[in-house]
Every structure is written in structure tokens, then in C-alpha cells.
Length: 396
Image (tube, rainbow, N blue to C red; front, side, top):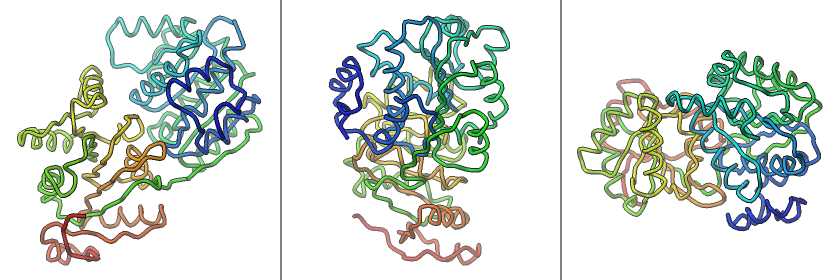
């Protein structure tokens, strides 16, 4: 379905034209008409399916029909990176409208706090906030939400994983009872259903590609010993068909590993930067800008970035470690092959990670043939893990 068929106002259609958006994705096709009708909606869609625009476009269309002052919409999300990403998309789509937005996510100085406070008291139409930072403002009496007509929870499963369930309910308790509610999540675990029952009224449900990687992702899996992962990373990043990849993100399971890998790659003169919660907000934003602008080829990051970065043209994702949560695998590799493009995802699996990777295969209903880097057979037998399916390492 084309965006011109939704009945959106001309200012939004102009923005879509200049952003070269023409045909809606599946989640947009299913959700936008329902949201425009004023329905509460539960949307189950993985990252990279266009779900942000699925709720931002009808929201902006509805806001254009009112002159009421104050905060009219609240969007809650799990991380500051995602808050920034959503704010950027709102700003782009709202370019020809009078709607304003403010991201409230913390990590800044006193000036940032004051700017957030002013926005929360009615200085912005749309607030995009992380629950923790918003709760801090609420405790200081900086929030005026009596005009809120729209509540959106994005990446609801991740917010619950982090432990924001109680905070979310406290925040919602301060909102007007009469409002439109939208909840978007990559999964529909029982806890998500429980939350939806509490905050939504007779919601319509839309579901797209639950927990499955995008079709455009070429997935390669390497069996490798833990202490040989660095050599494999350097080998791949130096060649083996990856030399043509210009935008690469490498995910590590811990902040310590992020720093170690970043320093080792830097020593080898790779164009690389790192992002984790150990870095200041200013450092993280600077690294992301450099990566987005193409000035940095490789970004090493923790899972905090797997749902909070939207960079066009990422053509390679490397999972230095197998994620503990199988669904995080989908979100990690979802950084590439976005919006119907193609990309490559490479995952390193040590013998002790075989069990975790088997859970991923079960989730996405696919079994992979593994490529082997180095001599892992002896170590595999010693550690009692399943043997790799095939032993080779070659270019493809």
C-alpha cells in the first residue's frame, strides 16, 4: 500500500516525498489505518520493519488536527539511544508541520535537565522518554501531562526485561484516563499481555514477522575457540570477502569485551570506535555521529545498541559473542538489511556457546552449517560440547 492511500494530510505526504518513502511496510500497512481510527493497538514487530513510522505518522496526523497547548503525546522506550532515534524520525516526518518533540533520557548536564523540564511542562507536543529519567522529573514535580491524548510504548519487552514494569505503571497512573494507547513489542510474552490488559482498551492486534531475521540477511556461523575469536575478527575485518563492507557493527556481550576488542583493533589501525554504558553520553553520541557519517568504519558495542541504533547502510554485523537471549540475536542482526535491503551477519560460536546458539536455531526455526576457524575439534571433545558440523574456513 502506498502512503498516499492512508488519507494522511499533505504536510506529512510532503515529508514522506522528500524522505523518499513511497510504499508502506507490512506493519505500517496494518497499523496506520487502525491508529488513525483512534483504536488502541498492540503491534508485534521486530526491529527494522518500519514500526516507528507506523505510530509516528498517524500520531503526527492526529496532532495536526488540534491547536491545544501542552504535551499531547508520550512515547516511552527502554534506552537513550532509541529515544534519540525516535526523536530524529519524529523531527524528520514533522518537518513541514508545527509539531515539536523532546527526547528525555538523561546523561546530560544541568542545562539538559532544565531543557527537559521545560518540555515536560508543556514546551513540546511530543515527549520521548526513558522511564527512569521521566520518573526522576516526576519526583521533582516537573511534569504536566493533563493534555496527553496518546501513549505509546515502544520496545515494551525490552523495558520489562530491564525492570521498568512498576515505573511504567506509575507513569501511566499520572496520565488522563481517556487516551489512545499503543504498545509495540518484538515478542508477546505473558508479562506483555498482562501489561496490555492493564493499560489498553479493547486493543486491535497486528503482528508481523515475529522473532525472525529479515530475509535479506545472509547469516554465516563460525565455530571458534573463545581465545581465538580476536584472530577471527581481525581476519574477517581485513579480508575474506569483508573488505568491501564499509559500515560494520560488532556486538560483544560485556562492556569489558567491548573495550578489549576496541583497543586491539585500534592497535591494528582499523577505523573503529566503541560504545557502551561506560562511555559518557557525549562520547556515545560523538561515536554514533562518526559512524553514521561514514567517518568510522567499525563500531564495537554492547546489546544496548541492538535496538537503539538506526543507521542506513550497515552491511555487516558481527556477533563476537552469542547473546544470552535468543531474541537479541534477531535484534542484533536486524541492524543490517533494513527496509528490504540486504546485508551479512556473522556469528562466532565457541564450544561453550553451542547451547545458546541451539536456542537461537530453535527460535528462528533454522539449522546452520558452521564454518570452522582454527583447531577446535580437540577442545570441543575435551569440553563435552557438540562437535561442529563441518571443518573449513574459506572465502565465499
